[in-house]
Image (cartoon, rainbow, N blue to C red):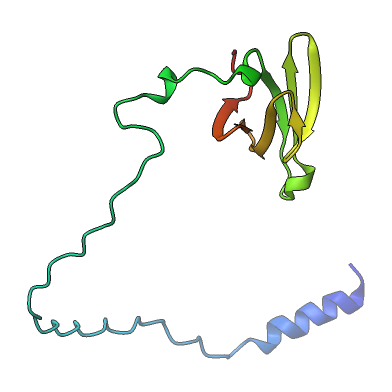
Length: 136
């Protein structure tokens, strides 16, 4: 060890001799409890607006027939990116494959959204979600 470093360490350790210890930490007392608010006249809770569903309540989504353009289409994988224009869905159907970005169309399908594990297709007025690897 060079002598200048040894000398600096010696001066530093000898300078702290005789220095009083810092005071011990004492946490502040808890704040006093807040006063209870005055009771107002009982007001009825607001009624939430009714939920309107695009599909009838008694019909399950799995019971709806699959759009013809989506038959046999399998999402092989997706490349997700924070910018929607750089997201890519890799699709396979009937022996052919395609790489599509959001907004692009293939067959009768338009890619509405690409997520990490699924692709949302729009066909006509209907949105259909297909998971990666899902067998049609």
